[in-house]
Image (cartoon, rainbow, N blue to C red; front, side, top):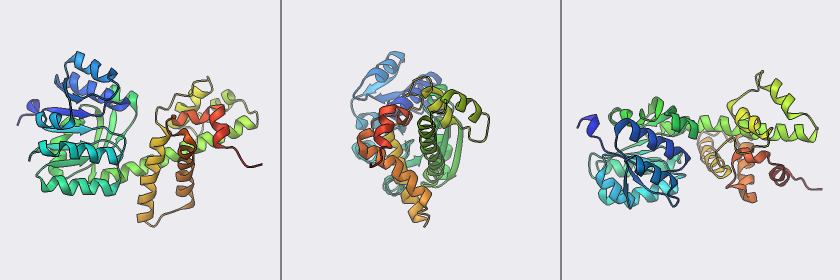
Length: 298
């Protein structure tokens, strides 16, 4: 099958999926999609030429490669189960979300037994990078599957790296996300302390970004928050808590349940349990949110 003939389907049209889908459609001239509950992204892609399907099963019937961009392992498993009757030998499923290792390994064993290829390819970058086509792919797949999916991933990624078999990509992504979540927690607490100290955020940000404490997370959170915009980091607290749960499971398997890993997990888990799961991580800097999160017992 020539690469031009590969029919690509995308399920998951959120902030990331919107940019991924636009790049696939622009660069290949074709895309198969299932609409979300909100139709904004789907309608835009359909207007540009995408073909809509009413269910994941119908989409899978028409596609050779099915790209999933979904929030968590439970939804990935449910979607694959829905597609199962249409997943014939030779098709490939790519999970681009951050999923649990246990789930990924079970899916891989199941699909491989059916003659269906599977790859897990969590991504680095956000909505802006998805739109620009400059995401990074951390791939776990067999060598054969990796060779077949690289052209597809390259449609919306500027770096595609294979780390090993299924599970290896997730382990690499967990390391990345552990660092990111730790930085977000530190930035949030540090600038909350600065506020309590009546330290000028503008002046502090100016000097901090010139030193070793500078980071992308700092710029996305505080660079906007100091102007009163708390939407600079478009990643939900609920997803951060989910990621830290998966990361903590890996740390436990490695006998590395360190105080730091547990603290970062508890930071986001506590925020989610406080009813903040739907907020963005940058909204942790909202005065009312900080008051809820950092309130101490008198």
